[in-house]
Image (cartoon, rainbow, N blue to C red; front, side, top):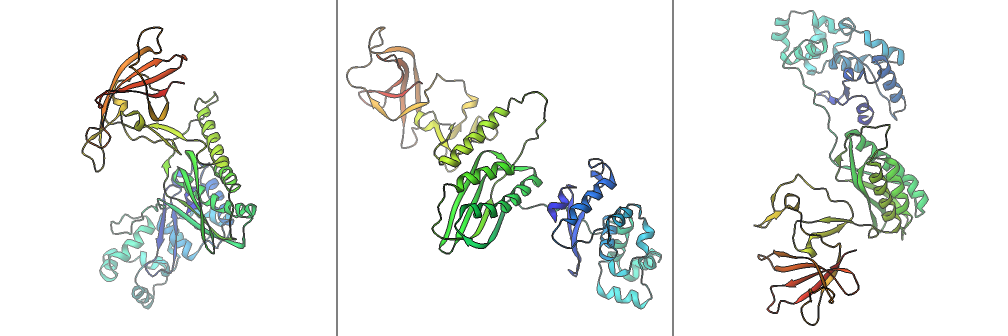
Length: 428
């Protein structure tokens, strides 16, 4: 029901009487009238949506939240015309309601009936001072909140906030290892998680799936290169991933989890071509390739704040989300600051293709003369780092051209006594 109500208003509150006899949702829709084309248009859509809800709902509306609550408990709308007619209800429509709609102590209800009070109007016409003295401030606050009178003791309604994580499980009506049947029943879970994301205006980069059978469960991590709440995107990825799976036993239950989500940026549509559309299409292509061919097919390269070349490049499944730029950041469990390259001057060019292990060069030191086996292009670039850990580094790097006219990256290891030379990478 929260999903239905949140479509029409950002302010949705859960209310429950103190005796737990009545529970329901209060929705503040006045601020949404203009968005939906007026009060009648919004309430008509709400009524039609509620007709499709799998359950019996009692709907009512009033210009006060407590008044709507009373009407929903005692005189809910029987059809759409009655529901729309409630827009014209005033305080007189509440005076005729029975006193049983009040959320108060049961002993007060008995006392009022013994005094001959059967309607809210009987209580509302009593002198306020006498009512307060005999029946208490809480009962008066309940009355005031329904009739629109300010009372600081009235029960406040707190907007409902959905959980930060999503988890839902579905039992299959039959046990099967057929992928097409399993995918068909997984669609309902995908619908639920995407609706949950849309309500929060969030997107996610990963959905955790579990296919449960009698001997355990098969786990699937469905990943996207960009945060999204698009149902079609997740359906396409699930279809390709399931096509590569094999189950040893019949699947009985499906479970989906979303443990992390992030706020999606607002998109302003334009009649002109969108420069960012190419990046989104590329991310979708990467997602499909990884879903069909495996996780290691497409990896995203990112830089780490470590001057050592072999440590500065990391490959992972999703693009790195950098936090706010700080010149120095404290690394957990270390006493040294992490250098942020974005705050430093640009260094000399570095190759993307590094050898897994630097290759030592045999013979004499490279000859930097033109026409020799090596031709100097730039350098040296001093890299000195890690003197406090187990991998210290002190090197002078050079860009050079070898006898095959290939652009290479060489360095001289200054920590060794002989200061040997190594080939570390190639420029594409």
